[in-house]
Length: 383
Image (cartoon, rainbow, N blue to C red; front, side):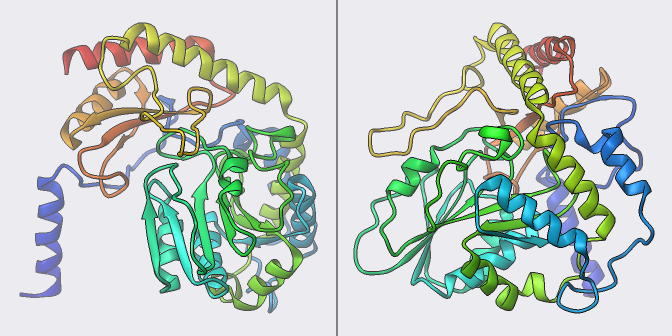
């Protein structure tokens, strides 16, 4: 049997489990899109778009340590560090590569890794690459850190698939002096904290490293890590996904700087986003209150020894539907009414937890929130 025949058998198995994916051949111009992480609507902001039009070249030409360096990269790193209240920041070409590249380097400085079970794939893959003893803890319930082993704790702040948030101060309080916290703020940056600087903005503890992205609320492309200057300098010298990767185009760095300026002064956008999120949750509460397990959101019966969740206010609403088949049916039915909410299936989420993942943006309207709630309630009542 050839490798292509084996590949076809594997695809057949994926199809039989209702987990097959294919790239769409068209955009989302004719639907109301509830899949994008462009929370503040900056990807289409005229000032951000204009920055790209000023480009005099396309690619950066190489890695930052070679010929790919640019003044725009350095300026953006300085502005990100200032925004987050950290000593330094380091750009990567994506948030995924920032996570996958940073964890193996920091893991060399500790003896064990602890990871939240709901962490993003870039964090999971970074842990695998580290080849260090590791354990996965129950979502938002970091166990007590005891013994003499130093630990790297890896967690999101606002979880991109669950839609719930932890209290970073409570998580930091679990750490000992010798431990490290890598906090992924990808979904919190731009929408939470002063000037949208995230849930950990007020925590200046040097044990924290912040992982962020430019591709969600900032509407651009790229990722970064921010923290103490010594840690960033080590990443420059050891992070393979930085050393060997071509740098971001300078034009994207400039567009990101414009987007960052708009984010820092974007309280009006954040107010609209919060209003849309509140409107959708209120409408869903009215439509789905009898649908067990969907609404209202619950904190999973958290006990006193767990990190408290802050649910019900962010831009991500997760609608659990169980089977892959049902999630697909509901998503396809919504699309017939020009509403796109993607069906999230394994391996993105654990088996038996397929769902719809709704992402809300500042440039949605309150009327669109009501429309989505109405159509979703109708679908769930009939499918």
